[in-house]
Image (cartoon, rainbow, N blue to C red; front, side, top):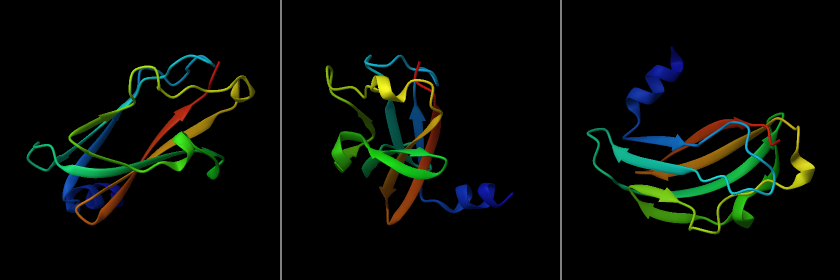
Amino acid sequence: MLELLVALTLPFKAILHAPTHTPHVNTPWPISIRVTDRTGHPIRARLTMRLLLGGVPVGKVDNGRVYTFTGTWRERKGEEITFPAEGRGHRLTFEALVTARGRTVKLNYWVQPR
């Protein structure tokens, strides 16, 4: 119930789109993140991404780079996220930290590279 109340008080919506929870290692994993106001209009946001293992940060995506975008963000073609062979079989949490209108939302998505 608390999550619902928090979602209703946020001044924006953020959605993560990913093709699979089980990406192949050394293969591009194209994700996208869309941020809109509560009426569905694209808004400006900041994004940084990291990987968690058991809730503990174990890696930064794109070396911790912070992206600023309006509406939809996606990696450039040829620069998509790839998981190294060492990650095979480990259940991780991909976390996208989205900040807009003075609030930050964590979008968590479990992944297990194969």
